[in-house]
Image (tube, helix red, strand yellow):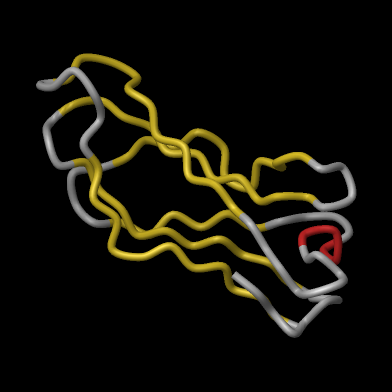
Length: 104
């Protein structure tokens, strides 16, 4: 996404998700840092449930690092992994939304 706020006061990554097929899964959220050119973890590995839940990761430190200063671009990643027994070989996950919320 893009934002006109190149010097934000808060950067949150909100994802509403659930697993589709019974199993043990975890979700982790990452926000791209343009200064280090790498992903920063904003939500540590958290159990994913079978009901839609909102998972929020909040960036810390110099928040302007998460916005590309030349054009307001922002990037984030969602990681899901199986952490135990599952009824399927690969994780099956539904997402209702994934939003980057920028305040400032």
